[in-house]
Amino acid sequence: MIFITLPDWLIAIEVVWVVALSAYIILERRPPLATLAWIVGLATLPLVGFAVYYFVGPRRLDRKRRRRIMARSANRSRPNRETLRDALGHAGERLARVATGTEQPPPLHATHVQLFHIGSAAYDAIIDAIGAATHHVHLEYYILTEGVVAERIRTALIERARAGVQIRLLLDGLGTSRLGEFLQPLRAAGVEIARFGPRMRPGFVNFRTHRKIVVCDGRTGFTGGMNIDDCHDELVVGVERGWRDTQVELHGDAVAPLAIAFLEDWQYATDIVLDGIAFLPALTEVGDTFVQICASGPDAHPQSIHAVFFTAISTARERVWISTAYFVPDESMQEALTVAALRGVDVRVLLSAKSDHALVDAAARSYFPEMLASGVKLYGYGPPSLHSKTLVVDHDAAIVGTANLDNRSLRLNFEVLAICYGAAAVTDLARAFEHDLQRAHRITAGDVAKSSIGARLFEGVARLFSPML
Image (cartoon, rainbow, N blue to C red):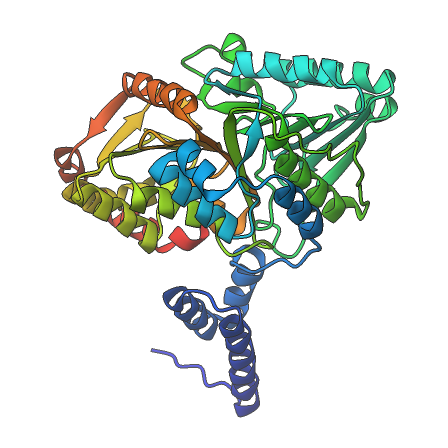
């Protein structure tokens, strides 16, 4: 065996290097186990460990936020506690309180809430809203892929831009890095296009905008799991080859926080501040439905969406039905799910039987034994692939958004969700969930027991990477 003896001066440099980086990590106040894991990694492989932490580690992002505008909008329409209790229900009131406590706007009035469970209908509604816009259309997407859907939306945007409507398109630098000449006709028509983070930059895997936002004239908004991609449109690719997803359309005051989320992201990407009544119309307090927008990321209150999901699971009395493309719960979320099931809550998790990330699928399977032992019901969906990110909480709240139940969504990416309170949205989402179960198979302890030793070993290794997935 050959031993390599390093010079004392090199050892001293390494010690100083590891101590300095460890101090930096400690000051970020991450969870103790994650902090220790990063420190051990840096001590063992100083250069490689630093590169991994720098580019994919859970670092924070500092940027200016429009809290003044958010606070102003929130304070103009803050229903009293009695009104909220009657309108939101037991679970809904607690969700609203937690979200507001993590620096999110309170529930705001909506004159119209529409859930879409098929892509073709959602894209038709978006294109109709773009066509009706008179002042501005703002779009923010993680992925835009050339195809039939992208061409339809591009045509609608060009038509409105030529009519004098302000069009702004914000695309993630990593998710939309290969568009070639597709964007040129948009620019030629006067559409402003910006990238949220270059493709290569410090933390380029982190700090992604995973949001999908459309805002028209500040009064109509869309969010949910659907990117601009043919895979979401069953009329283009067929049901079996498409992705099952969910989108929500909002009208009224509830669109304001969605508009603010876009304006913040646009300012971060371009250094241009957009303000004024045209972009943030005065709140009317009209509408019988309440919707609360929660937009979180590495620059916001720590884990706002994580707190909402945790509260939804841990305070539910009857049911928590979850759809998620990627299922890699952290320790607190895992405990919330298992304890809720042990309390007798009907906890169901619908996940894609086979996603587009083998490592994530393996990590997800490593959690199945604990989930099943506590009474959590697991279902593998597909084909088609499941991309929907939703929660049904008792009969009080229907949550539709962009965040999966994994660490990357809940702590590292910029995400957004809409908490729709009231029976209509909950009934709609619950019915869609039950319909999805018809395309899913129930995962049992027997299924888990059939896994080979090699498969279980791979799942255990994949689980080690859970904080980065």
